[in-house]
Length: 402
Ligand code: SIN
Ligand code: CO
Image (cartoon, rainbow, N blue to C red; front, top):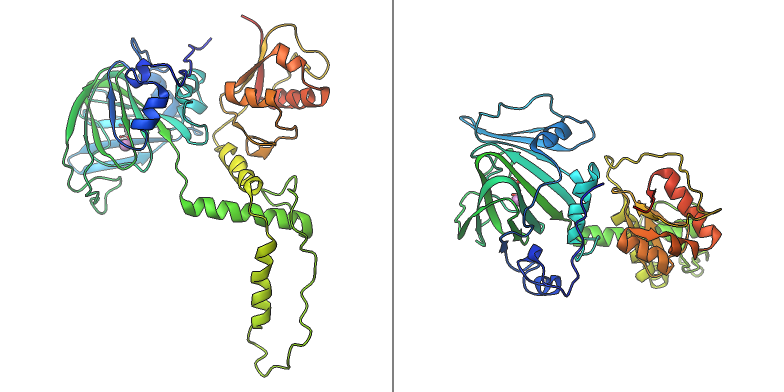
């Protein structure tokens, strides 16, 4: 049974945020300024060992990098790895991405940060390093909580404006890092950094482990393209018989079946030129296209719940059949890899529109990642049959009462 890491109440001061409430943290620090938190998790014992990180980095489906600093400067290799430099060799670090996809307790640890929307939470990256190891002075484009797991790490940070990088390096290294703060983090200490704050974390001694809770930030280009793709797929589903990625089931939309007409067009001497009338008629269709919240949510819901290739489920025969009988006790829990989100009447699971409606109990399941037997009993048989499908896919599991 994995250790429970409860998500803090947004109005309760919490050691996780240095005695601030999540509401205060979001107001004063999030995306604004760094925060060093001593003993964010008192007595912290990481969910995985240093050896576990090496074992993960040997696996094909796990994303990992090995960064070394030697006489020839910085080198970076991508996993999977068969062997690692000796523990006695200083200045190397192994970074494993998305540990939350591969380990239940790591996923539970990351969910402590769910006072921030799932739409923003990305992954738990874990690095191990020997003395002097690190990834060099750099900046990231996303927010990050850097939690010290084992050993000690010196973090130097700077809010400098000059973020010029050294050209031609295998990794992002700042050309002129000017540290403004300098702190040594011990197990359980944590540093929050907003995007673009320059930082350099160097292991002090061997057996250093740092856990990075990272966030995702879509660019405006990604959002605009996704919105238009979602709108295009609705048109395609309704009129051209192809739902594409975002058109199933089709949202109600404009009637665009009317054919183009060009009565009174004069004869032309330039038959290869596009008729301006046709160009204008194309632009005029835009007035009928619905770019509303439902179309935006269709893109966001499917895109944000879509799974990376290395999110693997274990489809199993389950002993429970909720459509027939709901056990007297116990609860349905989402698998660590499952992504379930909602917006109004739309419910999204693992990149698809869920076949059942977004009713309050399923929204509770999405927020809590668990739903007790009594709440499931109140659902209709059709919805319970869909939950059975999720159980069979391995997207959810039945947990008997302890
Ligand atoms: C690390 O764990 O060494 C890298 C984390 C970071 O600087 O983003
Ligand atoms: Co960084």
